Image (cartoon, rainbow, N blue to C red; front, top):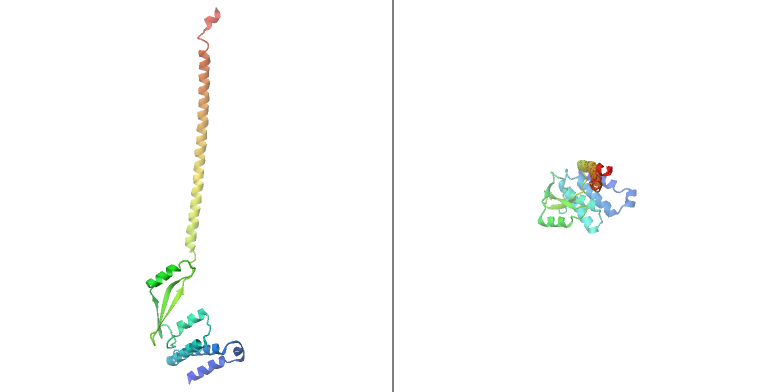
Length: 213
């Protein structure tokens, strides 16, 4: 009795005049079967599985174009073989599937892509034991705030070191210039002394008595 009332409520909700004017009747029927199956998943699992299986056959026979995101969600929620409504821990088992060698090679080929599958989830139906596999896409990594802080600190350290090197080089340059000036002065004084000595020796050794004669 409860099941019949629930189905009647769902049917009334999907047969309004405004909805029928917009949506495809086959899509409405598929959505009705899907929602009815989920509604009866706990109270009547067998009936829910029959409704889920009917929905699968309807979509396949009509070749409905379903969005990838919606299709993946349905595959996770309804067994493709028996139509069982897969509730983790209740009617299905969820586990992470280890990568095989083939999958590792496939991942290496996709290393240049922005997104690549890094996890493979396995959904096992506890009614017919069929396994459904889905890849979980990995989002690109965001730069960690801690890494950015370390980078800024390293950059500041390098800048400070470069400034210190320039400061240390300036006094050395000044000292070298002062030494060169002192050396030039010494060279000039020595040249003047040598010149005076040369002039004195050029007088021929005459003294005061020679001029007195």
